[in-house]
Length: 178
Length: 218
Image 1 (tube, chains in turn red, cyan):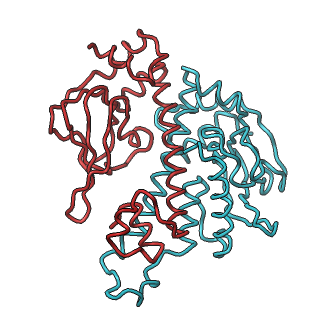
Image 2 (cartoon, rainbow over the protein chains, first blue to last red):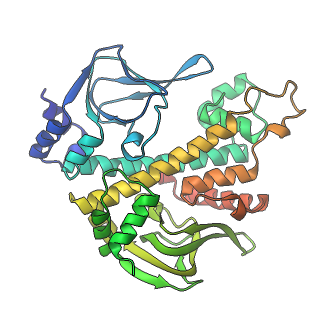
Image 3 (spheres, each protein chain N blue to C red):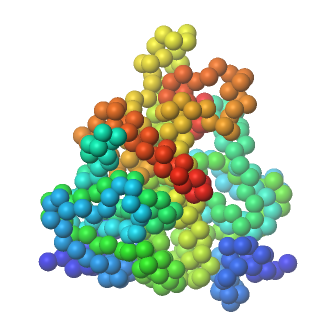
């Protein structure tokens, strides 16, 4: 399947004309990552975002010498976009290719050169929605910690360890600080 | 007198946004309604549907929430240049606070229809609006996450040896939480405007009620 065909199969780009997608990949040529290779490293400068168009990526976070898997990235998902809009950020996770992957790398040069390309317009609109959802979700999590409501997704862990008794402990449990 | 280009430059100096030129942002402003407000004049009211977003070009805006007894609680004062009210347009949530001019102010109001039109444009003006918002939301999220990390990390190495004793000494205060919430909402609360624990209760009770109502948002 051609790169343009892969982009066309991504829901986000369903209304983007083929010609615009072809122009987009001239600015952001596809890059391949073999299975097992490291795509991003936790703590390194976050200056490039990535749009996964084929394969599967795994995000891992290292804390206190322990590596924890925190998420999986599927085709059509964007990763590391924060560095595109606010400078000086660091990668919050290490990302590894779980299988052979194909990605478009989006850096500031690409975003400036293709700023008015309909594919970039769609990407930016999508990211706005994603950020807004994360903000609401973070707000909810803070409220959970403050109100001592047991977060449902960590219910299983809660049985194995003593229930957190302070706001800080609950924050740490929800936000992965301990 | 400051031109729209001056106001755009001021906003970008205070809120750097990658790939946005002052000229393109000034074009966004020129599609907005620009009003002079007198001190005390309302901009938006808590609980109302969000039908516009705002660029504070000159002056200041007081951010308030009402408690169950009907008393207004001051949460923060935003100084120009700033943008606010965008969350309501992005995710259709009602206003989380009331805002009014503090001193004579100039505000550019971008109504929902114009906002949607500009946001969909494959033009430099559209790019300017999208990226100013993306930079602003990214800062809110990164700023809040950074504060949360600070709250849970520094004293992590010294957990209380025995349950109970000393636990409270290490806890996060309500004010800390309110500040994180303020960063998340984009108000950048400072200590001077944060009130006591009861405000906290009010804010979160309101938020939870609102969250339940808007469950589909998540």
